Length: 549
Image (cartoon, rainbow, N blue to C red; front, side, top):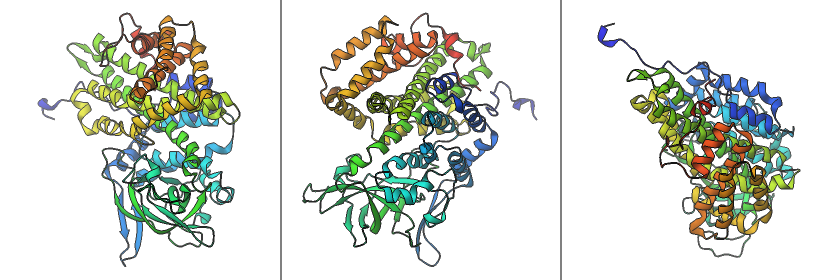
């Protein structure tokens, strides 16, 4: 090699680590009642850090999904081909129980699943979409016992069987969702897809869905108008929006009409196909009562929104790990970047933000575990998931962008992995309701669900007296709650989320982390950019919390 091309001062490859060697995550796993899953979570973390899994992820993005609408004879097939790496990732996620298997009922299982999902999502985010949807569909389907008996065992299986086939012939099934349409987006009550009853109890669906991801799933929950209702015009005297199960392959083995018009050309999440299917006499089976479709999917939405928060926490922890790894191994102006006070301030700030995301998302997983038998936890989950989905997902883009900058120009290069993380970062704020939708949902909780507000108060006040700044902020937020006008919804969501995170960190995190978070986020001693923590914070103590494995 020519002397002009000696490679020096480049950070080594970040491979062969345990992504679960993450102090805040492991502490929350134990605290929320799933310490029994520690070995499994560490095994998942080692797989995430392996060269094999990273290659699967890279391949799934190099070779993006490809739509085949017809076979060579001209028959419609409407299938999507994925890279083998995508199938490998999805198969391992299902086998580890991150899809429907969590509903087996073991105490602490939602917490264990949340920790595993948070760790595994750091391998690659796109395949997590069908994993999350399958996980969320199971409780919604329970309202239709006959359908649950038919499809539930496959959805709760740890077996992954790709390809379209009669669901009764498969030991493992995946589920997707088809809610939004081009004219309404999150406003699903304006949906124009119609469902007409058939003599055998099924329905025939006609319409076009705008954003249906993972179209190779075996079954989908979709929303359609019944009884002559018209979402587009607001007219008609029918029942309204209703939930249906739509299988790709019907019980008699024939293909259900599911004409995929195209795959979306998305900013990120490109390993995961997102499609526009057209229904024309497509057979669906009713889930829940007519006109009660939105009510039917509420539990499903709670599950997917929690996964949004977990996925964003995962993206933040992954980005912080990469930034600190680079800083440890890169020198500039005479010393390692990790020894530069200003770089340390930035990294500590990022670490604090990402730890707060882990603490809140895992607390919500604990509430999910206990909600079925504890009314207080169910009420807390109702408001907590809304806040966590809003705020944690909002913070991901800022954290990943700053972490990318820590790598300088190297972080702007595709091979670093940071551009893929950055393209992924806005997604969870959009899916399952954008920021405004969640902020408005918070206003509904505040005005209509006093038990949820009381559960939030009780949770925050568990830290009463531990930090005067947190006490003062909570008092101010209570004053703010007297004005719940729509244009204040984002302010309330942000402040309620930050105070809740502050309460969790004051109670459970080391003093270095709690003090920095409360001083910067709760008390407001912080600039608009990362790296502006208050004077005197314990940066050394904070940086021991980085998940380097």
